[in-house]
Image (cartoon, rainbow, N blue to C red; front, side, top):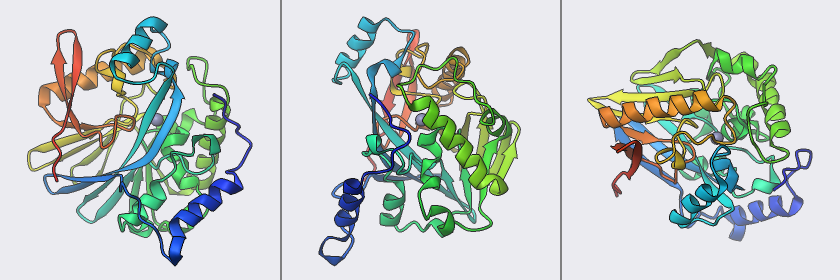
Length: 318
Ligand SMILES: [Zn+2]
């Protein structure tokens, strides 16, 4: 798979999107709304799907035996060579704050056109961009910040918007190290470019934290490192309930094979240590887990199963 990092969305794609939204002179609603709401104590949580990314199967674990990797995909009823990656974003309301956690991939990558749906889906959920008081970014990879770089989005956000990012993450993207990753061609350049563009566009609104920061009552962002040096997770706690948004610390394969190195991890050994530590903790305290690339809506629990982990999907609530 290639990613042409200089091209723009094709005219055909833009026209299709506009037509779909304004057929018969009014916006069309999607058959599948791709959002899911739940409560953590008094905190409102909405998981919104930005869409799906199709990536090479090897991204699962570039240190794994290809035959074992293929067998895992087969066991999961997935094709042998393509990984269909969910792309989940979370909106949290706590007290008087409305907090967007990550922002999807945006519209800049026509090869990945099944994703980039976030802005439209927030609108469909009657969530006004101007109501967002805070953005928390787990890290600055393009599938987590791209939605904020879509034309016209910055102008619709509040001028006093606060964007919370680990200081180590902002520093990393000034001169990022890609020597340990294993990504498809085109991705490192696209990631470098979007990371730098994000820092330039939003510098004045960024609120950097060292290790953790309480964004709102019961909403704590905590740096883990590993995936990227400033990768962070968001811990929600209210009324005895807990939920963690793990960003890219946990992937679907990570329950059974937490030691497999994902192709997008900048420090794979540390990323694996972070994953095991987090999964152990979530299994022990029985809290809910949501993660960017777990199958939508991704609300689940973690169980310990011998020397690895088991993914336990949450019950459907509606
Ligand atoms: Zn990601």
